Length: 600
Image 1: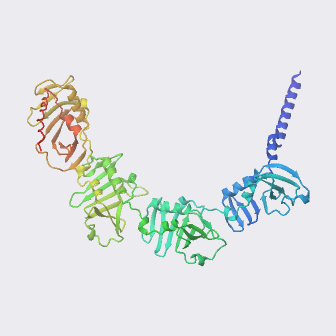
Image 2: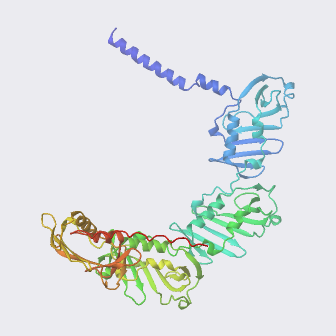
Image 3: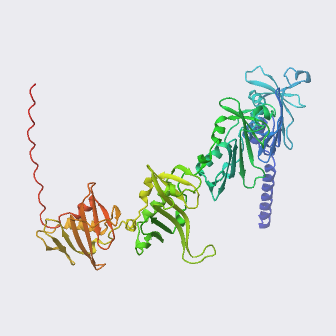
């Protein structure tokens, strides 16, 4: 075969294949046609814009707007879109069991001449009206007809239940479709007064009757309870507002959202019984019965919605913490990259965890009582001269477009007199006086030394080159090492290498349990030791006092202000026998014989 002929046949075959594929794509497949043939009607559900139902109870008209369904008759209201879509699906996938050719006079026998149950699906090229007739002789089946057709179908009678629903069954029982997370302002109006709040930078702020921080969780939960409320009963007709106590509502709640043209306004009227109350939503037609629990939840006092946390700050933007105890020097803690230093101790490393714990303790501290809404009597609560004041500030080392160089206070909290187990407190930027549990003061150290880093020594065990240990009533022990093993320079007996290594490991990374502040010098020490570190080329001295009755020991380190507490495991490691033979423990004494029982 010539190459030109072969090329021609290939092009012809490709064209024929493309034509067949295009033609078949425009024709329903055999299987698809068979599937459509088993249903009573055929339509594109995505293009449906309405459904009209006529039954014994109502003439119902449903219309679709966007993705939502609405009732137009017998009442204008939002429809339950899921219920309508379920109804539409039941019509679309209604299977025909049998098809009968009937004459016009037979239609009456099937109950289709004056059908009491009809439905019409509105869409481009939609099907004719569907008529439901009498029940068929077969249990669970009914007769169905198509407008202007003599064909009668036997179908499942469950379609009757779907089409016989009342209008109220298709109404949206959600009180409102509003997304509660989008609400940024609300008000509650009762006979007792008006509560207003708005959301600022993600947090709720009460505006009326007082300007105070709102409790984010409580307010968000309250809004969620409103928008998630379900309507129990639709009151027939539009109703007379006076008859239901809605002419002058007992309670009105208003929800605002950014961008919305109108707020959602919900009025509560009189109680229908102990469990239900009449209500009306301005954006919907009708009067409803709602659970009385919602009205109870909305009957709040301002203090019920106030934030009971003592203060609220973002610790990530805090660069300075100023602590001002009465009659003592001011303590300044400063952030240095990821750690903290004590400015008032010459930038000595601070206990960074304690700085974070202070912030957490004050933010997590709950108000036990809102004592006063004005601060006109500070002396009465000891807040004119507070026992301690804490200020959290940000700090800029140079001017920026947003701020000038220097320290800018973020929040200041002052603590006054004690009241039983509580202490009075006040935020400097608020007029309110509150009381909190006095235990919160335990997290506010009032001596600079208490803020020191818990790490007493930061050494490397292998760089400790000499040890000198003094214990009361025992010979002094001194050891040295060069490049070889440890050697005894004072004392007697062989060196216990295992104990010496444990001693060096413990001392090199020694940490305090906590600092005690200035404290008093260690009297009658239980242990005094000195080690020399070759890297730092200086001695490190530690003095340990007596056990304090709680398996803790007071201690002091030369060059560090104040005293601190050491734990039992650390002290035991530092008291190990480094050289010589340990004194054997005394043998246990035999118990005395038990006394003979007395004769009666």
